[in-house]
Amino acid sequence: VSQEPRIILFDNFLSRADCNTLIELARPDLQRSRVATGTETPSRTSHGTFLTGRKETEPVVLKVEEKIAQCLKKSEVLKYKSGYRKPLIKSEALQVVRYKKGEFYNEHYDNKAGNASHRAATFMIYLSDVKQGGATYFPRSSGRPAMEDKDSSSAGASAGDSRAGGNDAMFKGKFWHNGHKAPPGLRIYPKQGRAVLFWSRLITGNEDMASIHAAEAVQEGEKW
Image (cartoon, rainbow, N blue to C red; front, side):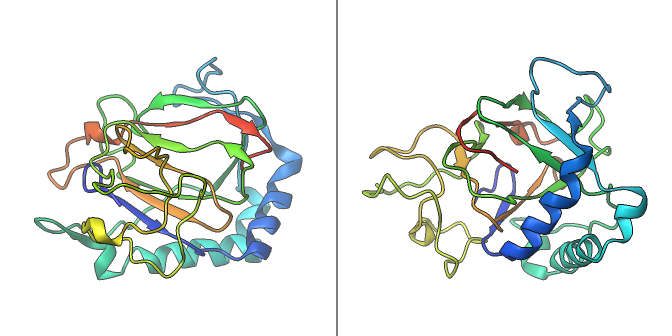
């Protein structure tokens, strides 16, 4: 859905049952989210927890990690406009984050400042639908549609559409905000089971400055 930064979208990546199991596994241990320096800041108001310790061996965690690993080996995932990327071979523990109404994470990079090797890419799965708000916003994305979208009420793209290409004709379902004209950048709205893979690092190894993104405030409901 975007070449700059490189973003791939997968609908129905996880089942409703697996999403709900992950939520319930994480719920008892949620704590105020922190930024990379380990501090709480007004720019990030969610709560979250890493699935570590005994939770690392829970069947649903092993299943999700294996599914992500298999996904990242696919040639259509590694294919890049100028060739192929190296496979991603190391990951952090899964983290589950909850945003209540009004909670958000301001624009940020997933790498530590000036260290593009810290996190090459992020694989994110929406575990719940959100009644209103809560989009993941990439303000510098190249992936906005060129054509007019007449249905401005839908928050999801159909599961059968192809998302890995750059042809605007593929953008039939709407997962970005649009009111006759595409806004700057790209907004991806939460939909239970939907996954988003994006790279923070260019194929050269440098940080992709277009990968800056935000978790916009939830206006109604909860976002997991």
